[in-house]
Structure formats: C-alpha cells, structure tokens
Image (tube, rainbow, N blue to C red):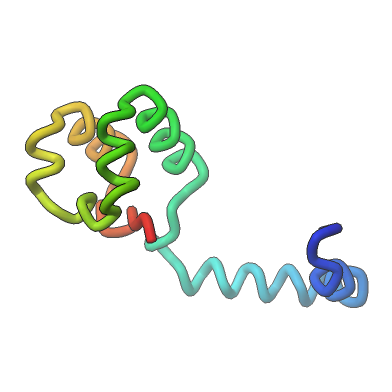
Amino acid sequence: MDVHPEIRADVNSNPIEFMRQEDRYEQQLGDRAIRPSELEAMGHFLDSHPEIAEQLQKDPSLIDKPELVENHPQLRGLLRGHFQDQQRLQFV
C-alpha cells in the first residue's frame, strides 16, 4: 500500500466498504480469475521448461493454440491438472 497511497486512504476511511467493493469485483470475475495456486503452478512449470517459457514469451497467444499443447505433453498435464478452464489462462 506504500506504492498506492490512494488505496491506503480508501481502506483507512472505510475498510468495510473497501472490502465489499473487492468482493463485488471478485464475484464479477467468477471462474475467469486465475487462482494463486494456478499461477504458482504455471510459474514452477515455466521455470522447469524454459523452451516452452521462451515460446510463450515470444508469442503469448500460443497458449490458445492446440498445437502447443499437443506438442508438449507436460504442458497438457499441467493444464488438465491445474486449470479447469484453459481460456482463463491468458498471458497478455
């Protein structure tokens, strides 16, 4: 909050309303939001698979292409095991 003093001011002035707004935002995202555990799993995966990480860094839209998953069974396993909806995974 040191980086965002306006957020700190909002929280300090009315913490209950701030949390209600946060809850509404999260409800709007619903299942589209990437969960922290999914983000962590993807980070570990990309750290241990630098060739896939490099491909996705060059062209993030590859995650939406079936060829990438077909050519990398490890990635297919990660997506099946950690992401119920691959469309939530966007690297933009």
